[in-house]
Amino acid sequence: MKKIIFTLFWAIMFNVQGSMLNAQNLANTSQQLKIFNQLYKTLDLYYVDSLDAERNISTAIRAMLDQLDPYTEYYTASDTKDLNTLTTGKYAGIGSLIHYYKAADRCVIYRIYEDKPAQHAGLKEGDIILSIDGREMGPKGSQETPTFVSNVSSALRGDPNTTANITVKRGTDTLSFAVTRANIHMPPVTYSGMVSPTVGYIYLSTFTAECSQDVEKALRSLKAQGATSLILDLRDNGGGLAHEAVEIVNLFVPKGKLILKMKGKTPESNTSHATQRQPTDPDIPLVVLVNGNSASSSEIVCGSLQDLDRAVIVGERTFGKGLVQQPHNLPYDAVLKVTSSHYYIPSGRCIQALDYSHRSSDGQAYRTPDSLTSVFYTEAGRPVRDGGGITPDVAVGDTLPTALLYVLNSDNLFDWITDYCKAHPSIEPADRFAVSEDDFEDFIAYLTRTDYQVESRSKQIVTQLRSILKAEGSSPEALSALDTVESNLQPDLPALMRSHKARMMSLLSAAICERYYYDAGATQNKLLHDKQLDAAVSVLQDQARYRELLSKK
Image 1 (tube, rainbow, N blue to C red):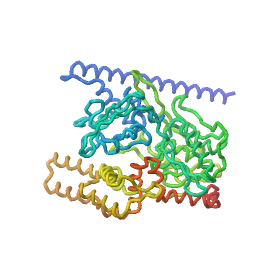
Image 2: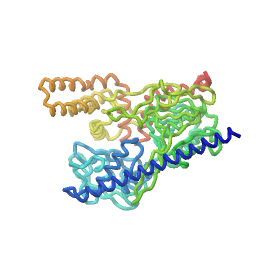
Image 3: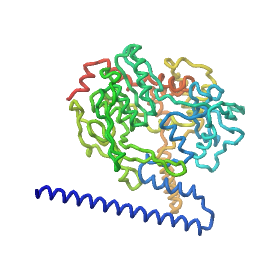
Image 4: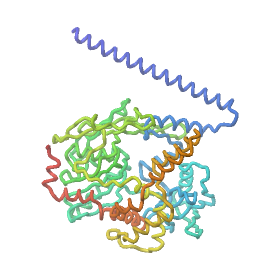
């Protein structure tokens, strides 16, 4: 009896203490909000110039959220369309992707999507947007780049069956196009096909609403074509809707399996998700391809399939995002997307890699070192670890030096491909096309001709340091020494590209194929020279090894 009373006493004390702390926190929050409210009213009343309330408050909000994590985001009423597009993969527009093009200080048509209004109207990648519906779209001038691009993007969108009158510059010509807007749906399964007589392949680019149905449809189609094993490619898939990840896992595991637990501060953020139906194929041998850009829902899929010993994971360690966001409506149609919980996969581990509550002196979140991670176990008893993404069962590196990644995302490459397309009205089919060695050398020469410079992080730091040294009145010798450091930081790009020749030629080929054969063609072409894919096929074609990889060591 005394033990029961003692237990009840401490339970009551903890509840009282928790209530007191919560009340104290609410009081402190109320106090700080009153201070901020009065502060802004005072500024608005007494500051010498007029204040832009919307801009200033938005800046304050975003500065506050920057102290939390990159995923807690504020969307104004005009931004919520972008949020809806991210979650549904649907919007009303012309079916193109635009990009700020520094050389023209305007936006350029960066990508045309297949069988969409922009393609039907005759727009092409590389077209520089001059005006939309008679309204000038640039130059950007002093506007912030994201704001400028957002304004142009908004002008391209509109209600279905309305017309966007777009004037562009193509080379030396000025052209006008009347493009009828339509409902645009971006298919999450970019490509699916057979990569050997018995191995099917599905590339899932994002986790939008109902994407699990697209994966199931592709799976059934591949089985009808003779697939007896499957590769699910989640490389460069940054995630999306968590419940769609659970649905995709359910395609391969039985009903009633616990896949996901979410743990947060509120009842609605503490939820569990189990498979709800019978699987489409619980036995088909399965490999999941991942890399360092596979995150969030991608990690739920590959991590759960690993924990349940249902798939072999091949590639590189994933990003490590074990956080879940929930949208909350705010006044005036604004939305706050809040990180509300951590998620835990079947073994009980959370794979979050970065600790945003603890940062270094330069503001960088700390990464959990491998030495501080904990061991968990799969259903078969295989050891796996938390705190750093999903480690593949078969590690196959495929990462290029950062300098070459900058090249592959540069306007210089975009311009070179535009010129290539002008000179080549057609190319070989995507499953056979490859750039020649002469093409490769021509691209290297083009980078030299256009004086391409890698805008690396180290170069940015040197530029900042130079400004500090000048402000401090440092000696000419110190500045000269910094110039020497900067020149040594610039990589020898021709030599670096030639040292990664095969990989660079493969990626150039895929980038060119995207112009002619769109996303599906680019993906198909990449697979021609893909050592991670080759490793996945090898695992599936050796069933003894496949079973060994999924067994307790």
